[in-house]
Amino acid sequence: PCYCKTTKKKKTPPRHQSDQFIRIRDSSWRKPKGIDGRVRRRFKGALPMPSIGYGSNKKTRNIHPCGFKTVVVSNVSELEMLMMHNRTYAATIAHSVSSRVRRQIVERAEQLSVKVTNAAAKLRAEEDA
Picture (cartoon, helix red, strand yellow):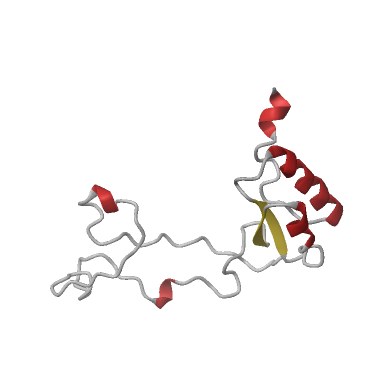
């Protein structure tokens, strides 16, 4: 795993006028392009406009808080690719994978000593029942 210090992710800037319209309340940032836009012209008191400085550190970019880079895995054969890279990459089981295949992936990952970030997902319900 990467033992470099991962910093907390900065809050993404709100989209211009997203507080006024429900339809764009939770949408991602779009650059304002209007001719009179206060945000585009960077007026004092307007929303901050993102620039390249908002990017995260190159060393810690795409690194999970556990210190690994993540790869989405849907079956056991995709997990085999991480055999030689188990010190840098961790597996994340895809959302649509059944609990039966999940169990197989988790067992095989243990044999290959590959970390699975969501190993307990969708397996707890069957243990309780």
